[in-house]
Image 1 (cartoon, helix red, strand yellow):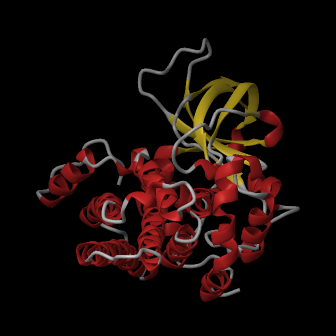
Image 2: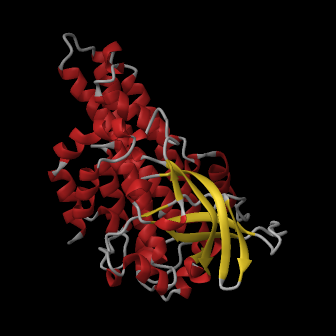
Length: 384
């Protein structure tokens, strides 16, 4: 299955995904049939390595697929972006855990979140791990999970220099908290809470977050393929933004559709929607342009320099905000009936704002780091 085939199948199933968007919101998770179709299309395997029966596409092909799916159903696009990144990281992990996850079913989905809310106490052969996490998107349909945590000493106290790890657990070792996802936007993602109580995690089922971000994990894993030489900041953050841009694309399209049924169409409204469409398209182009420049570099065996990484993060955040601000302006011109729950435009609008609230879209430090990188000063905090 080539890079273009996933996009073609999403486009061919546009009416199907669009028709199930409301059902996802009502259920508070993706419908089982929608998940089955996403598995058949292969969107979650786009960043999975060929040696594990993945598609190993370019990052841009993956992000374009996320955008296309999100433009039809915000929840499906969001889950494809979040869950679709996890095979990229698992490709950097110990081959033993790769075999456990993918050995019998290469279509196995892996959930997260990465926030370091867990605590891992060292014991022989691994850790005893506990914690509670929020925002595990698509988790009902996943059989494994990445969970962020901090290492403690033998007594359970945090180390003086915090060490952040990602731990990989099978479904039997964690609890999904039903009723923990009552929200105004992205409800169909089913991003429920996760609880782990004193689970034993063997050492081979963990990977250092700093090693992933720095690229050391890819080197240690012997991954020479360009896809796995991309910076983490050019994989995970753009996946979130791709979903946001896709949702806004769908929202603007819904604004256009809404005008068809109005008895009187305001010229001012049409102008605002047209401008919004251009802004959302610009966000799409800008996000992909940076990714393609980086991928060209790694394909030539080169490292992505810090200033370019900082530019990528700068634009990733700005693209999210630009797209949502544009949808705001279009939605505000649609008229009173556009806020009725039967109108798709209001769901896109709510989903877009929910996506903008993801921590990865917080602008301040990211913009500062761009300027710091330009003047040759080490960045502060936000990973590059």
